[in-house]
Length: 383
Image (tube, rainbow, N blue to C red; front, side, top):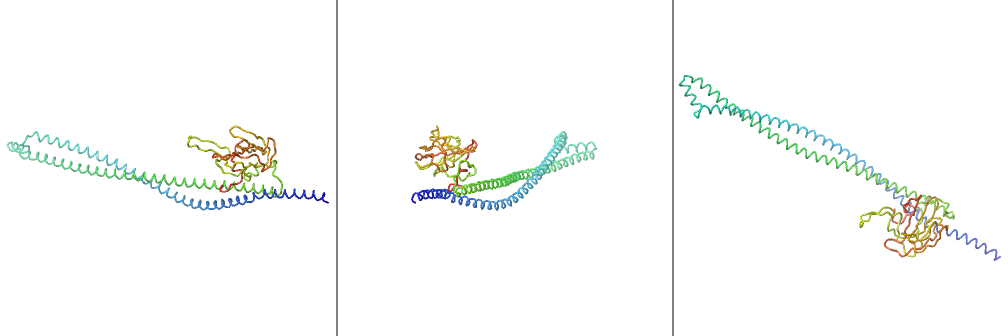
């Protein structure tokens, strides 16, 4: 009786262990799924808010466009006014030049008459009257003097009129020039205003487009994570293991972290101000408590497990379908090459933590470095 009970008890223990293992695996996934769904709700709410802002921005853009049209019309109006002012300046200058020439002609005639008067001697007209009286030609002399005198008066009157006209034209020219300068200043101000409005419209449009595109990308990523987590949850809930035959890409965004720690360097390009240059990180650098176990993020085969120059002790897992994960900087390696590992297998232990991190993680997809944050589950406080 006891011999029969022992195998039955062993079977029950194995089943219970499997159930416990499955439930322990499912446990960490369920809260993560709720976190992702909460992020999805937040992003959808953000998109709704962005839609409202976009509608407001479109209304604002219509107003800015109207201001743009108004400013453009004002610019064209000022350009026409300025063109008219320039034409008036040209006309006034021509009139002033014409008047100046007439004044020169009048001055020439007046000078000729004054020269003739000078030929009569110092007595001038009186001497001419005296000589004419002695010769019996007083009337003729009186006519000559009258003509000369009236001619001089007429010339002086014309010269005075031309001088007044010339001064008037110069004053008008000065006023038009002053007005044209003011219009030119106003035109330049309107052009700057026009350019400012154009810049505002363009900047607002670019900002909204970038914001919406970024939010939609984040939402799509979160939805992919949700689907991957649901797939993983389904597999774990069915009490079967995720094996190397599964496509790791199906679980992208749902994979567990190899160790718990703080990210000290992210994936991508980084500027080094001290050396005025850039470096590229193909993975993540983490600061993990020394002596912590580093686990496999997905089933696979150990492709490399030894020291590698520049990386330290390194383990590379082949997850199939040309996807690899790499952990480096290990104090101790706990697996060997060609060993099959499952999700959670301890690959090694971390050394004491340092400022620059003590664990390096990298993913390679079809030979290219891929951002680990897109493969792993969300960390608290990170979106």
